[in-house]
Length: 96
Image (cartoon, rainbow, N blue to C red; front, side, top):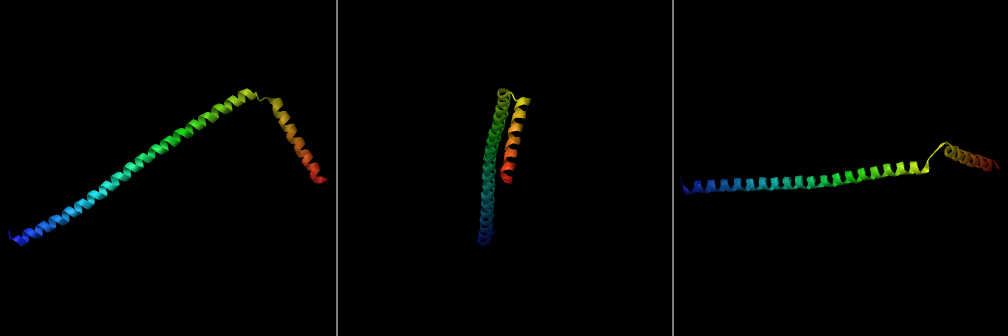
């Protein structure tokens, strides 16, 4: 093997080594992107948990409100009567 052939093979090895280093850099970048996306999923999970807690809190609050208000038929009648009177006075006021 002559010296020029050895230099040619060394140059080919250098090109392949640079190509391999480029591929390795790309692989590292992809790995970092995957890690970042996996970290973002924890944010989604914490948001889901917070929303679930909020929903549960609203449900319990509405149940307590319904129990404490003791909503019965006379309350509905009173609310309907007040709304009817407001509507009636509004119509009279608009006609005058």
